[in-house]
Structures are given as structure tokens and as C-alpha cells.
Image (cartoon, rainbow, N blue to C red; front, top):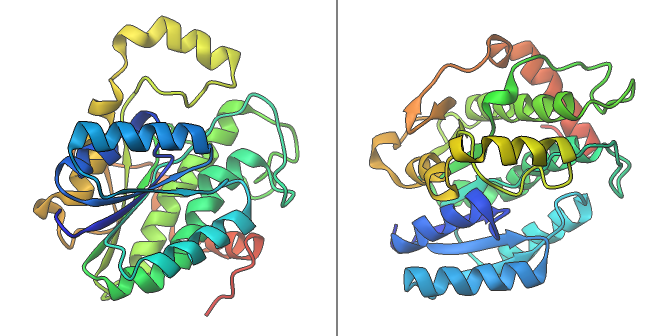
Length: 279
């Protein structure tokens, strides 16, 4: 991974930090994207020390804000001429419905719209750096369906439904993106990291209780990062695109995730919500 520039969102803790560390040990130039500056700086220093790699940069962005995402992409392009790997890792679970500064339900905004927008804004530099890879961290929780009449939980909020729908959005986005990027030298894949001990459900009492009960059976972030690292670095997946992975192997995603009409509709709605021109 020497001379490869890798951007990782949510890189200050959990799977994101473990992914950044793993790729840093391989010699990659890491660009960490974090919301909290203090935590980001601490993680950045940790990764430098543990990896012996000083090419660890930190960019700050609140992925709940579309302006912040656009500013992030602009800042990246001003400072870097290439991007070989983009890992959309950041994700949240919330117990109650909240809205972003853009008026969008927060889980849907951070888990689905943020990677959708950031990926689009960085596509030109990814294509110019080809072969390049886009990796999105989804979840086995992506079962269920996309309810277009309740996309932002307008008809009542469910913590589990909001999370599951956003993770299905990740898979649908990945598959549609792969179709649209065919022939560009840029691949798009997604993955389930497994049950991992992370801060993901920190805002939910139910998740925290489940974490305590299930902790002995959960993976460490280091193990949870293995598939992300594999998809970012392995020659075995060079040119592989539009796939869903678990434990470093291609796996079967839900039936609806393969419905191209659903993927196209979600794409169009997402583009409208983030004010992207289609063409």
C-alpha cells in the first residue's frame, strides 16, 4: 500500500481506527476523517506510534452536515492530487428521531446520504487515480425493505428500522454505483464487519445493555476491520466490484438489495436530497 492514499471516515475509534492502523502498517498514506478534533488528534497520534508511519493526516467534518461534507471534499482536493481508496466507515444508531441542520433524519443522513454525497464529490479524483476502490461498511442488519413512504421515519421512528434501512441503503448504493462506474477502473464494494465491540450504539440504552450482555461474543475492532482492510489492499479483489463481503469472502445480501428499480429510485431521491445534479 506504499504511496496509496486512503481516506477513512469515522477513523477515530472502533473499526475505523483499526482499519486506519492496519493500512498504516502496510505503508498507506492515511487521511482520517473525524468529527471531534480532540478524539481525532489522539487517534492520529496513536496510529502514528503503533504503525511507525508518520503519513497520517486528519481532516475534520460533521457528516450530518451537507455543507461540512462539501467543505471536506474541497479541502481534500486542495491538498491531495490522488485518492486510491475511499472507505465510508462512519455510522450511527440513535434511540430517538432527530433532524440534521439540513432537516433530514439523522441516521439516514449520516449512514446513507453522507457516503452517497462524499463519494460523488470525490469521484473525479478517484477516477483520475484509477485503479481505485470505494468501500462502504454496511451490516447484516440490512434486511427488510426501503419504505419510500417512510424514508425518514415520518410515520413514527424506530431505532432498529432506521438503522436497518440505512444499511440497506449502503448495499443498494454500492451495487448501483458499481454499475455506473463500469469501465472506469474504480470499484465499489460493501461489507458486514461482524458483531464488533464499538461505540456505535452509545446513545441507546438498549444497545448499551445488549453490548454488556453480548460483549463476550463480540469481535474486537481489530478483527472487525479485517474485511475493510482486505477490500482496500488485497490483490485478490483487484477489479472485483458490486459485491457484498463478510469475513473476507463474498457473501449473499438480501433479495431486495439486488432490485435495480429500487436502487435507481433510492439513487434519484438521494441525489435530490443532497442537491446533486444528475447527468
